[in-house]
Length: 266
Image (cartoon, rainbow, N blue to C red; front, side, top):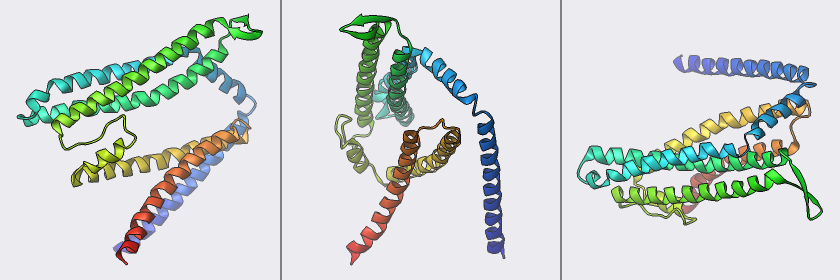
């Protein structure tokens, strides 16, 4: 009886969810249609505001790396006591973990900053003629700064990650791998014990569930924009391709682990 009630409850929640999603989708479609005439100008205005910041988009990346470097130095300072004191060991491990998280976030932000900054270079023009082609006076200096900021952040990220991994190996001497090696993730995973691998699996499953919410949401937004001719096919294909890669990659690996093991046992 309890199992039947549970099944009926699941079915009811599913139906309610589908009805709510359909209602939200319909409302979004109506809203998009009504804003269709004004939306291109609104989108252009948002893009102009984003591009107006220009090279300032690199600033959050420098902030992330600065805070990450502080955590690395504070974690490294605890390494001498970490071998004998459990509380120092845990605190050093926590600080080094935060340093690595911030450096990874900085890596993602580099791509965000360079993408928007390149658009800003095209948006801000002070024209002069050079070699028969129209060139931007201010953009030439900005382009040089863009390359400088890009190289500086990439070098900082790689150095911070390498130093953080090196410090982590001091308190976890069983760990293997170098951030400069393409097989780093594989070597690091192979050096993890069973409890750490289980934790990696839990984190991966959480990320999988999170992206299974974000990808459909992004696709719905793109589909609504497509109804007013504001979403390019390339963007829809990109998001859909990434979503498909995640699903097929996850389920394909599950299939391989399940049926591959069965073939090995025969």
